[in-house]
Image (cartoon, rainbow, N blue to C red; front, side, top):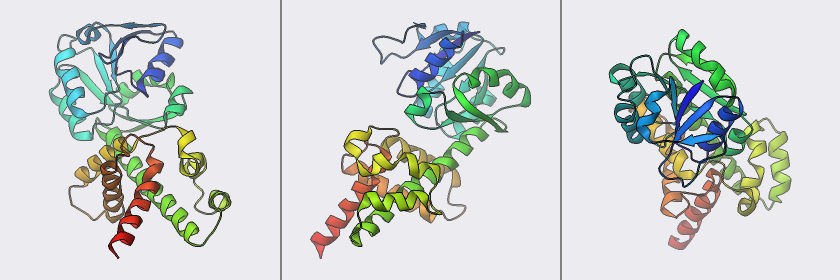
Length: 283
């Protein structure tokens, strides 16, 4: 299949590469890159309209809207665009109703390393027919595909997942601080945490990020999780209380102000330590 792909960032690059390796012809647009991976052809945004299906893995709603409304303006109604970036359900629903092409959303859950091994999970918002049409394509990039409902529902599911991840990250960080206050060896405590009732898979694979951040690399930066959590709070719209998410967002704000925005989300631990230092300085 001839597939267009917009956004070859840390997640999009391995995803597009998987499509090419699966035998698809991939035309990719990303003005921020000097070169594209082997097997992928770099094109201007407007050239993506020549494909029968296109995918965007862009960082926000504005760039996604620009691509669909301008870059795909000449594609026609037979063209299907899949929004895989986390942009929020409102943007997806607007584009699905008023955009120049058919639009579904399929944001992913997982890290860069999971993108590299095609181990991501994707949540798809669209009709049954649209889901059936794109599932084989998604299967080349992801390990699990869930049909969550109409367009926009995949984005809502992704925001809900990332709200859990944000509060879970803060919970791990607070547990480490409590263990530290009790003079425990943090590596020993983490073994206990991993084997405890709180030992979700996320706890296990984030161990290095929490205990040895300098060598762990960045799976998902604080800036990205902060953006997603902000979208989740906007979606809730004050209709109900989300005290955990609101507290986590405040810590992510602190982390961003401390210059940790491009560090891994496990660096909420450093942000909380910074809060402690400030409190001690004021007392």
